[in-house]
Every structure is written in structure tokens, then in C-alpha cells.
Length: 435
Image (cartoon, rainbow, N blue to C red; front, top):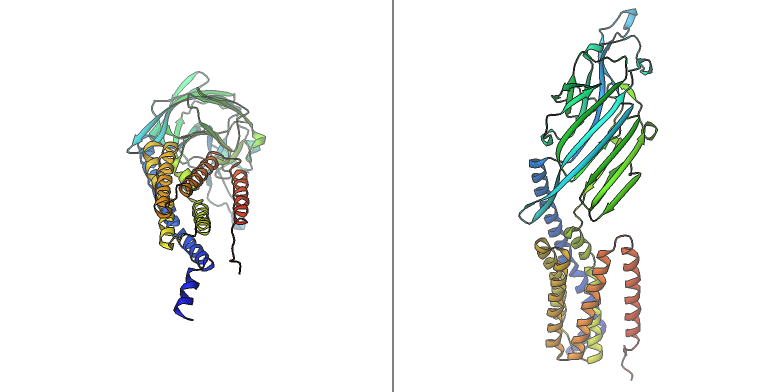
């Protein structure tokens, strides 16, 4: 092939499109690197949050109280001999459990990171029915009633800010740190006293003041459990296996109430040792920080290929209409400017929040690309079209990022409309020279 023919081949728009398409795919690699940077910042944010939580008090889970009775039983051995006795603990859950809690939240900052913590004032009351050991699957068991004790599960003991006392039938009993057995709870408090009259119903009450972070959960261990939580935090998220039966959420805070019965759980009111796990009976509330700029930045970078592809298509159309040549290196510079948007969005968003950071980053990149397009084309009309393209794309992306339930639907319809406009514009271009 002669040099002149080679030059004509390389300058053909077909080859140019192939080069530009390959360049667009190649430039996706930096977008993945930007995702890694955002993920790294998210990881660092979580690390700082966990450090603050450890100093204040982590997510709290309150469970109980539970009545525990030690027992021993002889197991028949071989040749009708009696093997050494085995020891265990029988657990009895309350017949009724009512908890009323108020959370007093506040935000804490370390550097650029913000977390929400709370002080919770909880009042628990309820009753125990006399223990019915006939419902336990234990043969020839001997129960040590004088060694019975109550346990109350608290996930982070560092958060306890008062000296709680368990009130049983009007009498106060001091609590001891730690749980006497870990069958149900890994940590908490224990109430030991030999004068419990377990032949009559036991009415109990206890008040707790707990420091915690983000989340407070309660295990619904009563045969009937009623839980009420309130706070002046305006952005709650309800967690666990049960949703509140009634809730009121406003700018002044929230109030939520739960009602759970033993039929809603997968364990009975009494059993021995570690036969059942109560953690699936949790319910509670999470104090949400409504704007997470890292998550929105991560969602936005997923649209990098759309921005690069549409800009490249528009610049190709400009070349075809104006018969001006744009070098592939200049295409690459435009793509890098588009990618810089996501770095600006993440870094500025850490300082001033997502929405304002988005506006600043979008305006900066739009002006940069428009100015560059004008220096290449020397055509004010074409530069205006580039400004309109960038403005429309950033408004489209911002709309999608603000939506939750309808983000996919809006994005799909928007891309369909964009494709239709590109098809319509392509019909006005003479793709082949007439002989």
C-alpha cells in the first residue's frame, strides 16, 4: 500500500471510530482505580467510626432478664451402672416483658468523619411465672433452687453508666458484672440471691442508662413482649426481625412500638443449656446519618462509561459536521477531565457534603471541557452544544443519585431517550461520500 493510501486509511472516519472506541474502553481502567480510592476512603471512615464507638460504647443489644436454675442429673452407664452426674442450667424466660426507652443522640467528629452516638435510658419491667420443670425434657434431674439467679444480657458493658438494681416483688437486689453462664449471652450482669420465692409469680423492674453507638436492639424474650423506643433523631432505621406495629417519624424525632408474642419466635419459654439461640428475636432502631457521600460517589462512578461514550460520540459528530480533525490524544484529555470529576466529588464531598461538592465538581469540569472544545474548534456554537451536553448529563446523573426506589427505572428511560437522540442525529450525517 502506497504511503498516500496508508495516510488516507488512517485518516478515515471508520478507523477513527475504532481508535476512539478502543480508547474509551481503555480509559475505563482509571475509573476502576477511582472506585478503589473511594472504597479505601470508606474503609478508613469505618475504621475511624469503630475507634470512636469503642471509646463511647458500641452498638448495644439488651436481652432479658432470664431466670436460670442449675441442675444435676445422673445418666445410666453401661452394665446398669450409674455414670457420674452431669450438670447444667435450665433457663426460664419471662411471661411478660415491657421496655420503655428514650435515646438522647449526639454527633461526634474526628477530623472529617462524623458519627452518631447516644445515651439510652431504659426501663424494663415484667413478670415471671413459677418455673414449671415438667416442661423440660430432663429425666431424674435435681434442681438447686437456692442457687437460682437472673441474667441480663448487655452486649457492651463499657456503656453502662448507672448502678442498676433489679427490683423483684418490691425488693431491691444488687447486680454483679458478667454472666454466670454464657448459654444465652456472652456478656451482661447477674443477680444472685437465695431468698427468691420461686413458687409464686415474680414481678421485676430494672432501669439502665447505656451509652451506645448508632444502633440499639432488644431481644423479645417475653411470652408477650412490648417495646417502645423514642428519640429526637429524625432519621431512624428499624432493624431486626420485627417491624414496629406503630411508629411516628417527623423532623422532631420518632416514636416506635413493637408487640411480639412467643408464637413469633422459634424457641420456647424454657429449655436447658445451649439448646436454643435467642439472637434471632432482636428488634430495634438505628440512628442513621442521612447523607453518605461515599455511597453516592461510588454509585456515580459507575456511570463513567456513559459520560465518556456520549462525549466521544458528540465530538465525532462535531468532526463529521465541521470537517475539523480532533486528535485521539485530545479525546483522551476530555475523558481524563470527566474522570477527574469523580475524584473532585469524593475529596470535596468529605469536606462540605455531597450536594454542594457535586455542584462545584460538575461546574468545574463542564467549564474545563467547554473551554477546551472551544480552543480546538474555534466555534462558539459548537462549544455551547458541549456545555449543554455536560449540563444535561450531570443533571441526569444527579437526579438518579437522589432516587432510591426509581433509580433503575429513571436511568433506563433516560438512556433510552439519549440513544434515540443519538440515532436521530446520526441520520443527518452523510456517512459515505457520494461519487
